[in-house]
Amino acid sequence: MYRFLLTPRWWGINVFVLLAIPFCIFMGSWQLSRFDARVQEHRTANAQAASDRTQAPRPLARLLPVDKRTSGMRATATGRYGKQLLVPGRELDGKRGFYVLTLLRTDSGKALPVVRGWLPGDANAAKAPAPPTGEVSVTGALQASETPGDNGVSAQGGLPAGQTSAISAASLVNLVPYDVYDAWVTLDKADSGMKPVPAKAPDNTGLDLKAFQNLGYTGEWFVFAGFVVFMWFRLVRREVEAVRDAELGLVPEPEEQKGEQAAAV
Image 1 (cartoon, rainbow, N blue to C red):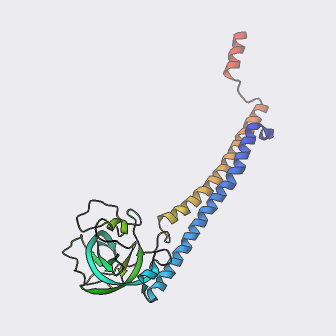
Image 2 (image 1 turned 90 degrees about the vertical axis):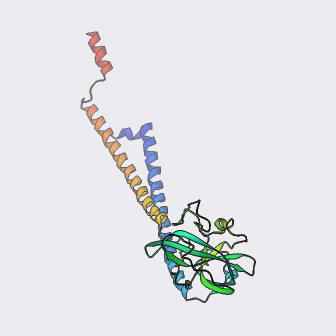
Image 3 (image 1 turned 180 degrees about the horizontal axis):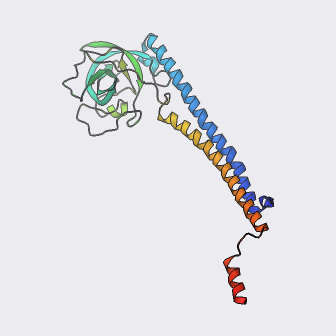
């Protein structure tokens, strides 16, 4: 009854099933390992953030370029404040507001973007306190340049003069007349009544949408494996039923044969 499994058509089906099942299991396991890796990175980033808050600040030059290891570390820099910009559409403690971003011109000739604090409401230059004058030393958490459209950063264009949607060297290069570090700092203590902006975890280290996509893909691949097995058994069952019906003479004759028999009569 099961001799049909040895036919060329079923050889093809069987080979496909034998290849598809381990492939689906492998892909599901790989996606699960990616999720586990992101969970571990998230734990490591949290532990590093807690450690960074207690460590002594280091000179800016020793922490550049920013990577997963140095992101969030406390940095210190000295210079004079220059141009001030506003970063609209930023939330803090569930409220919408804006960052006050001031460029610190250092002795190196480059300017360091410094987030001096956050204020609620729409971005308004009249609300933002003026930066301190003279030479200042700043201390805060080092952050990597933002990417517009990623991790909650707006990609909005056409902003009013004196505003920027993202804090990055690429976004600021056309807004200020001097070179800018490919990094920024958020102050430990905000200036003049503003709220300090907490440091963000490095990219791809949090339990974000991408992490849970990996978990979702894990389930999908295992479901695909189960579906392949289910369909194989279903096809085998239908083939067995067809063979049994043929042996019992329950298979109806094709319409062409019926027509030939009627013509002969």
